[in-house]
Structure formats: structure tokens, C-alpha cells
Length: 308
Length: 166
Image 1: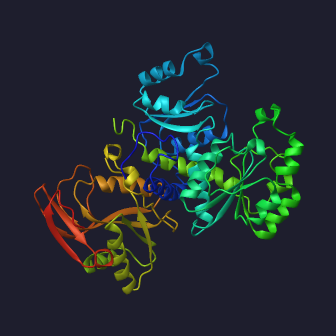
Image 2: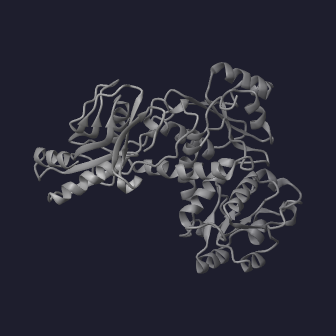
Image 3: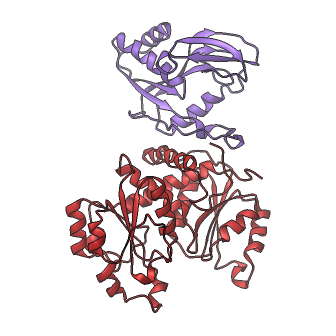
């Protein structure tokens, strides 16, 4: 497989590239069982995390992935940097370019910023989430996690629940699952349903209709706390009652043996109850573990300066 | 291969836990062939395989990245006598990489190297403990080794370096 410089979204990947990343993640995951959980793949290379939005999980996941590949990891601390003094993104990139880092992991609340950075640096850029646009490594780890559970993803059904409209996770994960041959449906309040969706995606407004579609996987999206103040958002308890995974709905999952996923971190009592968190077919912890393997696989594949 | 298996059998007493570890790709069928012969001699051996891709010192200069096979060592490596198996030893760089990867799994009692073809040209300080044949060949020639289990035929032959047939 030819290496690429950047990973910005799922849409620009070929099927072969997706397959390459997912299949290589398997030996990376095996590595976690060894005495020495490290390979020298990125020895002497530096990986910089540039997070304009707070994130503990994704950032640590990249941190662990890069460290297990023997890279040196640097966090560019936005709070304490001159960004708060009004330095533009491109000024920051120029600074990073002078530092000669090899990989930049970017998260930004505005869509398109990782691409802008990628165009202005020789380093490989990985989009770790930009606005509503994309979160490609989340999508890859979700697909990888489901491939461990289903011999063949073709024909399997995933129901994505929550704020689809404002979710980069929904956008990227929905796309990759459909490209793996799965059927995807959305369950969301009208105010959180995207205005335009591909015709093959059924849209539901309540759990009864959604359950009647017979999904195999329930994928809950995180309710963004900043959304809760907006007028179109019902209260947290109202959201839980109508769209959350209540204890009664967990029972339906259990009876039918459905898999449960969530990109984390979970708002207990909103997307899911405390009891639901102990559901035996929850894949939430596997998603976290697989995230490291998949991100290692992405770092293995990308090559700074490729194609320039 | 018969001779190498006999040598291994003589060199290591039956109490020793013997493990054959093949280096991807052609070292793997080679290790399996040796294991078959040792089993016929009445020995129990462990089998494993090593993928050295991530240990290559030229990895980031590749224009095409190989798909990873992954190493597979399912037995307890600590205190085993490991025979690293590769079809050819030439520069010794593969051997260096394989040793690095192997030691990530534990601490073997000792490691020896078995090859089918030993040719001069070392760039690293490694020597084969067991070798089928020794062949002094010009640098611009490549030794190709085919195994019936993966290639449909058993054959060893020489081609120009840029031509890889097995």
C-alpha cells in the first residue's frame, strides 16, 4: 500500500486503504499482550498533539499509540501557548514547521482546520475531530471493533442514536459502516436530525419504531453539554426519557443480544443509565482498547512529506 | 533440511525445550519443514513466527508499505532454546531485526540461527549455526528459495538482484 501524508476524513479513503489500516491493526493489538508492548516503527520521529478543544481520551489514546511505536510525543499546550493571545492557526503551524515535527494530531472546533494545517506543513496531519465534519480514527476504531464481533459486516444493522446533526462521530462512523456493507439508521429528536441524509438511511423519531427495524448494534452518541443550553434541546431528563437507554430499553437489548457502543465519555443518566453501563454486550471498553491499535496502524501507514 | 534437523537433534538433548521460530516470509515454511523432521525423530518442538517489518531500519524510506502479518509466539519463550529460521542469510540485517522482535516476547535460554543458504556479505555481526549450503555469489545476484507448501515447488535458484521470484 502506498503511504499517504494525511488522514483528514473517511470520505477521501479508498476501500483498499480502509482495509489496509483495519487489517494491520490486528497485529498491533496483539502487541498489547506481550512483555514488551513497544515496536521501533517510529523511532526518532516526533508526534505533536495540537488540541484546540479539550479531550482527555482521544489525546491519551494517540499518546499511547505513538509511544508504543517508539515516537517522541509532545503536547502543544493551547491554554498556555500564545494561541490565547490571538496567534492564528497558521502562525502556530509555522512555529511547528520550524520545530520539524513529523506528525501533528489536530482537534479543532471549526471544520476544515486540519486540512488547512495539512496544506501548510510537511508533517503528516491526523484529524482527531474537526467541528461537525469528521473524526476518522473514531470511525476506523468503530469499524474494527465491530469486525471483531461479526464474521461479515455485510447486512448487519447499526442504529445511531442522538445528536446526529452536530456529530462528527455520527458522520464518519455512519459512512465507514455503510462502506463496510452495514445498514445504518438514525434515531434522533427532529432538532438533532440532519436536514439531508442519504436515502438509504431510515430515520426514526422513537425507540419503538427503531427497535422494529431490528438493529444488531446500538450506537449512542454523546450529548454535548454545551447543547443542553440551546433552546431546541429538551432537558437532560427529558432527553433520557425519550432517547436515552433506560433500564427498560437495556432489557430489550439484552433479550435480543444487541451490541452497545458509545464513543465516550458517557453522560450517565442521560444517554444511558448506571445499570446500562454494566450491560454485558457493551463494547465501550473494547472501543477504547481498539482505538490505540487502530491509531498505531494509522501512524504506521502515514508518511510525512508523502506526495509532496 | 534433513541434515540440519539431525544436527539440531544431536546438539540438544531431549530435556531441552526446543522452539523453531520462522522469519516471514520464507523462514516460516523452512521452520515448519524442520519441525516436521524433528517430530519424525521423536522430538516435541514449539513453532512460532516473526514479522520483522517494524524493525527494518529502512522502513520509512519505503514507497510501498507491506501489510503486517504480525508475529505469533504462543509458547513460553523464557528458558526455551530458540532456533531462528530464515531461508537465506546475507547482510545479517534481517537477523538483527528478527532478534530485536523476538526478545520483545521474553528471555530465551539461548538463540541460534538456522538457514538454508549461507552467503557472504555481512553488514552485521551474525553467523549461522546451521546452514544447508554455503554459496559465494556476486552481490548483484539474489538467492530465491521456494517451498512446496507456499510456492507449489521446492527449489533454490539464483536470479539478478532486481528479479524476485519467490
